[in-house]
Length: 348
Ligand SMILES: [Zn+2]
Image (cartoon, rainbow, N blue to C red; front, top):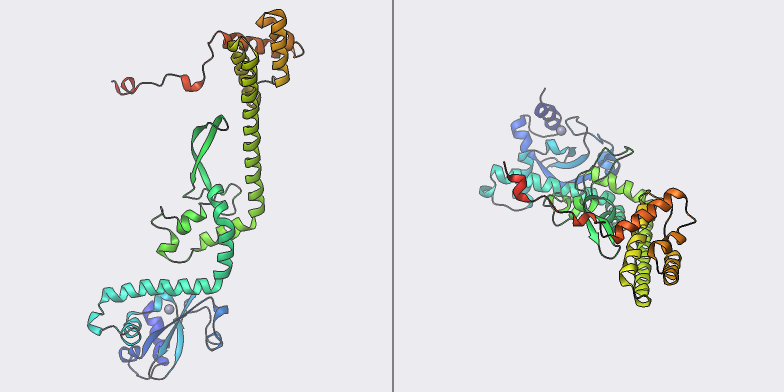
């Protein structure tokens, strides 16, 4: 039995005419639709909730009516057939029958089935959707992102990751390493021509589940964001403290070059320390001591040696070695490297 035949028999039984081709024209869509059997009004709940008149399991319950005998029933979106829509268009929406082409009917079905689905969806979840959307949208823009490159940040004086919204999920929901695609991107981002608000008017199941999940973990997420923000702020404080020290040293000190070298030296050591390369840093106080020792002895290396004397041999040696390189001007930062010229790449 085909799908069509499965609907034929029960529909005919509820009609006046004995011949199906005649009987089917007694029916039209009413425009009512319900999402899930538990939202159905009593008159439908007692019949075949969760199922089309043809017997198929359905989610969307479309009401149809027989205009001859007043029978009403329910079909799923697959069984909302053309003739039911044709009557709806001409009788309820007042279109001229000559305007009603096959394409027009198809278009109406697509548009209105979707509109009906949308209404049903928002009737069901609308209030919750608005609440969650309001809570998560801003956070989503900061969290459901991926790193695409790095840029030099002049405020934090370090490379910072550059993010864009994650457009595709990584992994599957429930996986430990699942990374959902951006909620805003999927729902209504203006740069996304297929955003669901424009295309369907309601979120698909995947987006809705992601929104619920994201909302459930929101406190954790906000907590993490706060830590990232704190890290940035303390970094900025460090940078400002170093700049202040550097300026102070240059002011007080005749040998500006030595001051600059010392600050650079301490900075490289600090970076190496954060990368796990050394176990010690040169504090501001220690730099001060080096400067004082230099004014007494007039010897740069001796001043430095005195002030790193408390470190272990390896550390001491590497710190001194580093200073000699900086003072000799042989240390170059990665950004000073000469890029490979285009010419030498394309040459064959
Ligand atoms: Zn059906």
